[in-house]
Amino acid sequence: MSPAAWVLFAAALVLAALVGSFTCVVIDRMPYQRDEPDEYGDLWGARTWREVVGGRSRCDACDAPVRSTDNVPVLSYLVLRGRCRDCGDRIPAFHLLVELLVPLLFALAFWRYGWSWALLPVAVLIPPAVALAVIDLRTFIVPTRIIWPTFFVEIAVCAAAAGLLGRWDLLLGCVVGLVTFALPLFVIWFIHPRGMGFGDVRLAVLVGWTCGFYADGSLPASGILVAIALFVAAVLGVVVGIGALGARGRKAQVPFGPSIVLGAYLAIVLAAPILGAFGASATGA
Image (tube, rainbow, N blue to C red; front, side):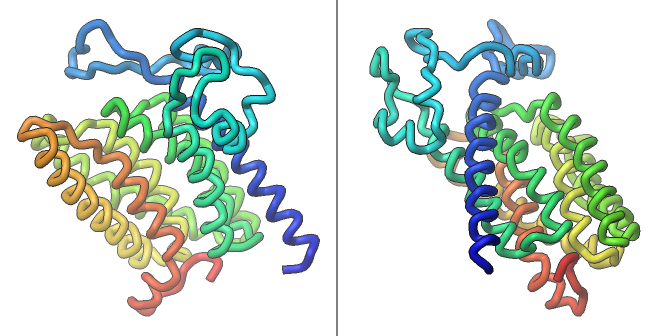
């Protein structure tokens, strides 16, 4: 890349880190613990966006407002050594991990797609997908308040990218991806609702739509790419499930959202070699 391109890339990483910092706010503020389980047995609920974005960030322990100088992504956490400046209480480690993870995932997507319109859908997907995965890990819920707004934004972004690329057939791949990812999970949920939350089905709608965009408009290739993403998610889910059962016992809850997100992301970033093995091409290849 030229020096100007490197500067632009560095600016994009800084922006991604700032978005990662806001992602931490969503992860921290959106879930709340119920006094008793709801009708579905969930111990956690999701606050409205008005509650999430309103007001300054505060320490959960002492309620002291976080200074603006302590809101620098990654750097502030390291300088404060992961503790509140006022009371010394520990700041959850996910803050540092998410602030590092969002720019890292963007950098990997950029490495694959560069400054092309094909980068847009995955770049938009990364922050909410990370938020959903971490919230699921912490609370075993997959908030609808994140999924549906992101899904409708992704529809618009994929449509814009398809138009700018002159490839409206890519949207048909999105539809195939959605069905391929979400339908099997819906069937599992319908047959055994205690084994899978419906939030995972909604999440599959979102990532399936986005993943299908990257099969270069080929409907069979969209199905193959998303089926592989689903397979990877299932394998990861089984591995995590075995670990959870071994550590927590037979009644342990196992979050599937992180596996869905990771399976879809890997399929998007590795779409070219995956589809190349089947004689197909990937979008932006």
